[in-house]
Length: 219
Image (cartoon, rainbow, N blue to C red):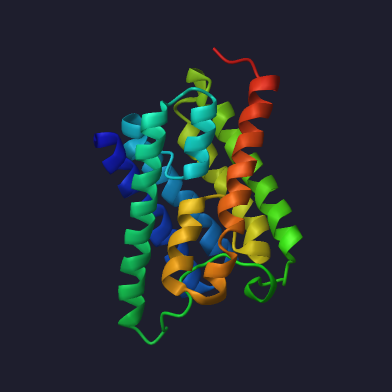
C-alpha cells in the first residue's frame, strides 16, 4: 500500500506544479522546468518506495521489462490517475478563487488547442517519439546501479528537454494520467482529443521497452 500512496503523492505533485505553472505563467521554459523539477524532487523522496513512476507509460514499460508485477502495475496506474485528478481538482479550486478563470487546466491538444496548430497525425507522431525518448532514458539510467545517485536528475532533465520541444506542439503529455484529468474536468474539445494523449504515450512506452530489451544488456 505504501507504494501506491507514494505514486499518488508523486503524481499529484507532478500534475499540480507542472500544469499549474503552465496555466499561471504561460511560459514554455518555466513549464518545462516545473515538470522536470517535480520529477527530480519526487524521485529522491519516493524513489526508494515505489520507484517514482508517476506515469502509466513508465509503469507499462516496467511491466514489459518485468521490473514490476501485473498486480503492482494495476495498483500504480489507479494511484497515478487518482493523484492526477486530485491535482487537477486542487488547481481548479485555486484558479476559481482568482481572476485567471478555470477554462484552461493544462489540457493537451492538437489543431486549435495546439500553440502551433499541429495536426492529429503530427500530434500522434510527436507524442510517440517524445515518450520513447523519455522512457528509453528511464530504462537506461535505472538499469545500472552505478547511476542510481544521479538517476533522478537525469530523468528530470530529460523530461524538461522533452517538454521544451513538445509544449508548443501538443502541450507535451508523455503521461496518460497527466493528460486525462485536465481533459475530463475541462471537458469539450480537450476531452474529445484526450485519446491521442493516452494511446501515443503507451505506444511510445512499448516501443522503448522493446528496443531497450533488444539493444541494451540487462542484468
